[in-house]
Length: 140
Image (tube, rainbow, N blue to C red):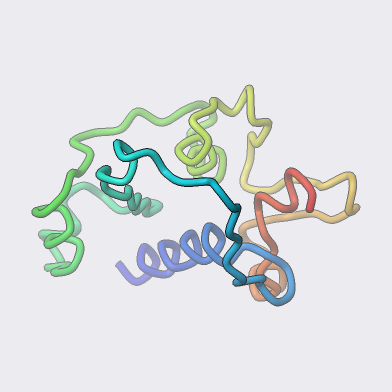
């Protein structure tokens, strides 16, 4: 359970705060740009993905907040992983909607040729630096 929570926090931190250095939190306003009325009425989607978190863990360990979220929203009844069925390529597939053969991540580590750096989920130093996954993959 502890490992699942730690991974969830790590995944969220990569998703939200995934920039090297200080994050630019300035609001960007584009004059004349507005969401359509239809889009303004749509709810936001918050996806929580946990690695190795079995379907019955929330009830088994009384994860109250996860249970509340699932009662008031939606939850997956089952999932079919992409191949290879390992963490990072599957999370990237969930985020992008692409299969690993299209987004290029096929393992829990990769080498960024532009920066000449290796990213690995197990690299604690890289995690503490807050290396941005999207930034490493697609540039600044």
